[in-house]
Image 1 (cartoon, rainbow, N blue to C red):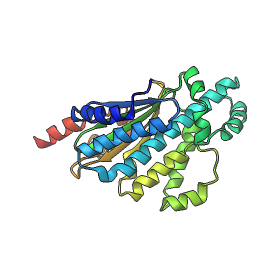
Image 2: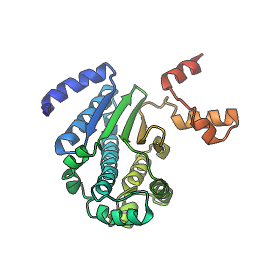
Image 3: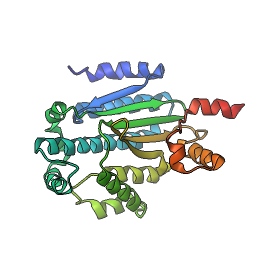
Image 4: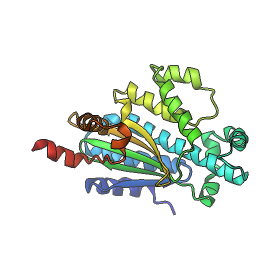
Length: 259
């Protein structure tokens, strides 16, 4: 049963005032789901007087949810077709089906399929007066071939100076995987937000893939990346060695810095 949007517009700001962590669980983002996401983002930004960031934060968050849903579609199609996603030949066969099912309208038609295969997308919002974090999670890790392709899309994105240039190059690319993620990076860059505020990681240990946005709300905010690089230089160890133990708590960081 859906909660009326008017009720959500009244209740969500109350939760934001209490600094509660907010989550949206979706199988395929409907018009109703988009409105809920707008209310979540808008309520947080209104509380901290940063409504000027609404367009960038909402657009990026929605793109990550849609991209995660596309990743779920790939898994669902492979399961329905009884194809081994780890087999290169079967992967190619499955991708041919996948390319034909990528429009946002078609994605919504797979909602029950996603439920049947337990493939939700979970978008979680954490926030403070200094920063808003948006974490979008799938409940499976990336395959090596997928991770390689996505990293390549990130690398290619640095050659584009605007979203217009990007769409002129990739507007007809129907595969989709990785394109939404690349677009988010360019969108952040155009809005004056460091592209490194957007990260993607996959964990075999926890069986998940996570896209994370870190949007500063205050000029005083020190990003995870800057703290990571500072620790890296201080400890003089390889990035992978620090990454496994790196735990950045901004509130704790600011308390330590004030001493």
